[in-house]
Image 1 (tube, rainbow, N blue to C red):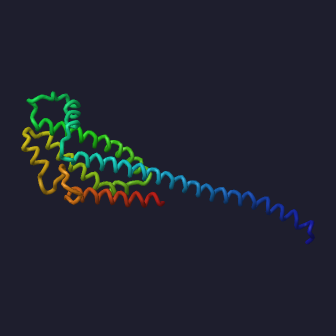
Image 2 (image 1 turned 60 degrees about the vertical axis):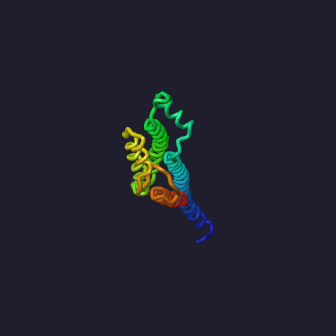
Image 3 (image 1 turned 180 degrees about the vertical axis):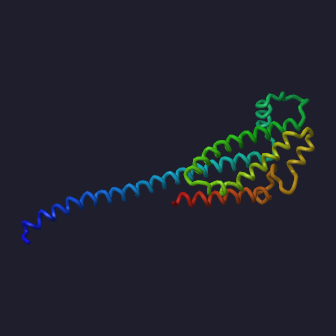
Length: 199
């Protein structure tokens, strides 16, 4: 075969192979881009979820603080339309303050739930189990708040605040049973989300 006979064949082969090769490279590029987009979304969503968990944590820590600060008492009484006079009993003050504190928790929980739904869409059902312990703890706390809101006497509220074990509503230290359980639940979420950020 002569050079003049081989050149048209080589040109025909290149004409067929080049577009095929371009399609393969484009497909590989698209797959890489897709992976990168999913990784970026996972990273961003993990950060948002972690921030939402921390907001709930901080609101719960604030709710567990026992001292009723004057400004907080005045804000709570004003928010719930309770007249601040000498006839008001301490039970009403406690109830107003804890109600106001819990409202802040619920605002954070609402934001948390929205972001958790986004996370569930991206990662599926595995998310539900990872957040279950955390959610169970703030639901336990909600039950205690409801008990306070139903009590009429100050002494009964103080008993609820200090009941042991577990002391849910009144922060004693980072070593009280509820604090430890709560920190561990958050640690589990952190580990899970940090893994998702590395993907």
